[in-house]
Structure formats: C-alpha cells, structure tokens
Image 1 (cartoon, rainbow, N blue to C red):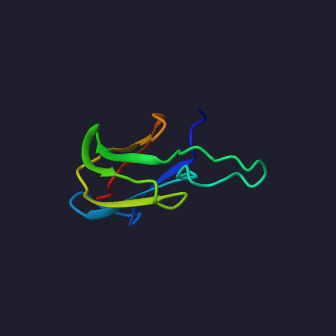
Image 2 (image 1 turned 90 degrees about the horizontal axis):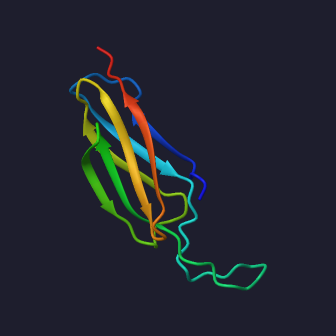
Length: 111
C-alpha cells in the first residue's frame, strides 16, 4: 500500500530545552468504518481505520493512543512534550487492515 501523507508539527516553532511544546500529527486517511456504501457501485466500503498511534522520542514511546473507527477522516492528534536537549520524534500508526506507517522529524531546540 502507498504511504499515506502525514505531517508532524511542533508548537511553538521556536523552543529551547526544558520548554513544554505541543507535538501535532495529522494524517490524510479516510477512516472508513465499514458501514458506508460506495455511491457509484453501491458496494460496502471495507473498514480501514487507524487503530493505534504511538509517539516516540529517540525510539522510546512516550504516548500511545488506542483509536476507534468513529474518529473523523484525516485525524489530528496532539500531545505535549518537555523538550530534551535534542532528538528525533517519530509517530507510528497501525491501521485496522494491519498496514503500518511512520513519520519522523528532528527536534532541535534553540538556546
């Protein structure tokens, strides 16, 4: 399966070690529940939704979320993090179909 478009953002954009920031993750995903019909064919669209999201700092999980199919399309997840000296934030997700994906971004505090 093709990689889904996703993005990680840090808020505020300018931060230093010791600050608490928001780590935002958004993914373009239909979050199909398995209860809708295709308007053209009339066939049921199979369930395909994100059911697990894990935020990691340097490969160590700091937040895990269990997600259900009732979350809206293109979900947005946000967590708070106390900034260490530097590192890499990664977000891993698993879909109900078993497909997995990951997005990473360098955490580079100023000052």
